[in-house]
Each structure stands twice: as C-alpha cells, then as structure tokens.
Length: 223
Image 1: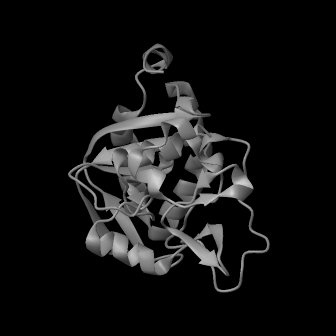
Image 2: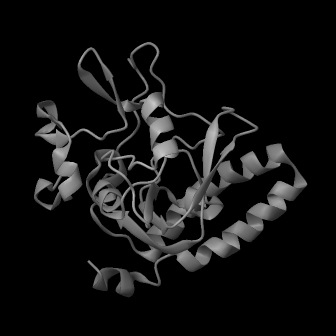
C-alpha cells in the first residue's frame, strides 16, 4: 500500500494502526469503535446517493465519477456501490488489498451480528483478479428484482475505463481472462431472467469489448 500517493481528500480519513496506518474508507461500518472493512454503513450509502458524496472519502463529488468495480460490472454497467472521485477510485484500485491482490479471498466468518455486505441482486463474490475504474458523468439507481432485492446502480456511458492488477495497469489478456472466468455465473443469472436477458447479455458483451485495454504494449506504456 503506497501511502505516499494518497489523494489529498483521502489524507483526511482516519487511519488503522492495525494495518500500518491504512486509511479507513468513509463507507466502512464501525463496531464498538473498530472499523469492519467487510461491512458498509447503510446510512452512508443513503447519504452518498442523495447528497452525491464520494464513497471513499465522503466529500462532495464533481462532474466526473469513478466507479471501482470488476470486469463483469463493466460489461453489464451494473454495480452495487456508489461512485467516488476518480483519484480516490484509482488509488483504491491500486492499493486495496482485495482489489490489488488476485490471491485474496473474502473472509465471510465472524462478521459482527447485524453487519452485512451489500448483497443486492446476484453479486459475484469471487476475486476477479483485475479491477476497473469506470469513469462517467452519470448514474441511475434501481431496485434489483432477483436475488437480494435492494438498490443497484446503472453506470452511465463511460468516458474511459482504466484497468488495474497488482497495482499496475492490467493487460488486455488479463482482463479477458477474468471476463471468461466470470461469464458462466453471468449466464446463469441471465437464464433466471429469461430469453431476452440472455440476448441482452450477448449485446452487452459485444459492447463491453471496446473498453478493454488495447493490448499489452499499450497498457504497459501507461505504467
């Protein structure tokens, strides 16, 4: 975790001495004065949407919005977490232990009672191996009709998408590998919704290809 590149707004966040002074994101829920990184604050979720506050630092958003998400969410343009400042999103994608380390897995045990992750819709709990910063100017909220029936977000037309793996720019091959491994679960979700959902998925997969890295050489040139 490179704290020397921490965005100015994130420097105002409280730090966790258990993890070498790592910033504690604004959205994190607290239990008895201790942050529970696996759980979000439902109240802050509502504030982020209503007041257009950055999901990571909690300060007002500007024109550009950065969604930290995985490749399947880029394909469907659907996510469960509100947007961030682009620099807050980028730092998180580069430095968050789960997002930057493909070998990390979600710990499900010993989550404090009453604290849950955002489980709206049929989310994929795997580590996708790559993280995307989806940059757009708009989003819309809607209610999931299957799975966890709660709020989800449709991300607007992207201006660009930056891809990260292990703190560096990801290659097209790495992103494509992640998409291929996550596709069976996405197809299963589409089957639950019916024939038209399967057809729509095919179109979104085709549309999403334009936002993958051009090739390994181009990705490396930006590192």
